[in-house]
Image 1: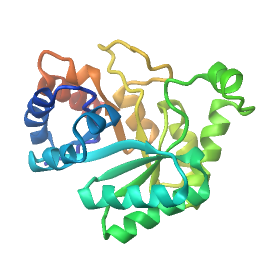
Image 2 (image 1 turned 90 degrees about the horizontal axis):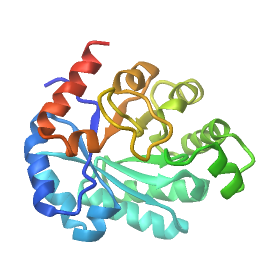
Image 3 (image 1 turned 135 degrees about the vertical axis):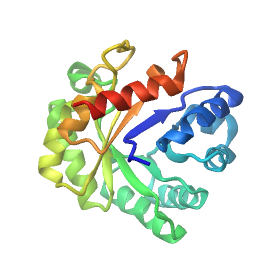
Length: 233
C-alpha cells in the first residue's frame, strides 16, 4: 500500500457515523484525527475503537496546561495507542518537554505535534485580539523552533508557513497541515488555506482534510479524488 498523507478529521458527534467513515476509509491506510468533539462525547475508548477498526489515530487534544498535568495526559495518550498527539506550542518549553517525557514513560511511539497558530486565526486576530506583536509567519516560526528545541517531533501549521518551517527546522521535522481544501471544496471557516497538492509540494508530511471527505456523498470517492490530485502533481 502506498503511503497516504491524508489525515481525515472525524469532526462528527455521531458514533455510528464515525464507525461508517472509518470502515469506508481505513482501507486507504491514512490516519484519522479525533478531536475534542469526539473525545469529550465518547471518552478515551473511542481511540481504541478506531484502532480496532484498522485505523491510526491523531489525537488532537491540543493539550495546554502545567507541565506535570500535560506529562500525565501525554502518557495516557501514548498508552491508548495514538499515532500522533497535539499540544499547544504556546504552553512553553517546559510543557513541551513534559509531553515528550510522558510519551517516553508510556514506552510509546506516539509523536508529539506542537500546534503553532490555529488556521482560523488571521493577522488581525493575532495582533488586535491576542496582543501578539509579531506577524503570523514570525509567530509560527518562533513556536516551531521552540517546539523542535523542546523535543517535539513536529508541528501543526497552516499551509502558508510550510516552506519557512521546513527551512528552519530541517527535513526530518514533521509538518502536519490543516486548512486544506481541494479545488472543488468550499473554504468554510479556514482562512489560511491551500490545495492538497500545493501543501505536499511545499513540504508537508501530512495534510488534514475534514468536511470535503466526511460530508461527501462518497467519502471513499472524495479520498480517492484527493489522492489522485496529489499523485498527478
